[in-house]
Length: 336
Image (tube, rainbow, N blue to C red; front, top):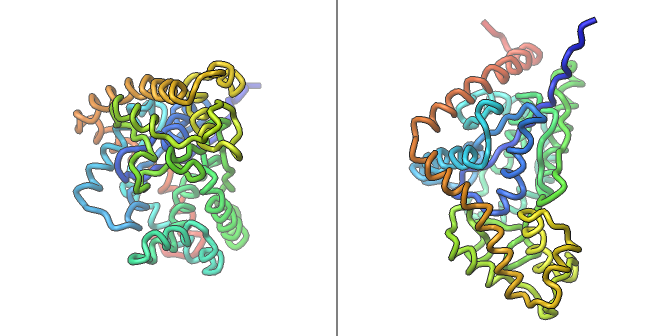
């Protein structure tokens, strides 16, 4: 009897094109995406529709979208292995979004902590898209029947909502959607601010010394790490609760050197924080330099980037189109 090769599990993940990625984006998501390509069937999207919940400059958004794709390619996403596409280039995302909105409850959407957090950050623009954002995120995942979704700690609530909506739809209309599971990498799931190490690193931080951009040059990286908040103990020791600043720097150093926390503690035993910070900065510079060089080369070839995105959208649309046909038929929408 002929053996059949088991189907690879499908992974879907996306990133918003809100300017240059931070070191936190790279360690927490992008760096791992490249590693997943051999083991899984991967779909990666530039989530431009999600970016619209905050008012965008149209020209900047278009440029940032192409640059985000170029950076993903530079960081190791291989279009021969994975589908890389722009969210708005696959209309099925917004089509399924409406169906899912009609199967989500107002109460469960109002309990989303990210809605509360983002409303507080942008009180002058608490729009409907911000409120229904989790339904579009659910559509992003369910339209491809993704088995796994790499999620940060701040997205687990949205994934749970996605599963609830999918289960509700399946119960009402028969099995349609795979119930996705979260996929968490062992290392670098959450990199913290260099200035407020109890908060996640974010480029929306008003203090530019709080984050490292993937486009930062070597001098800027060294300067920001030298200014990183630590403590007065002067000992390199891993203790996230008592020493969040030092522990965050150790996490970054661990990612780029492969050394465990005990080895890092031994390496810097008797050294001050000054030497430690410079070493962390150098490990980041060494890791980002080839990506920055590759990004410059790829970003300069707009035709290549656009051709990758066009092919990615075509492949993604084939999968998404099949799902939408099934969904429309099940909910009773007439199709010609």
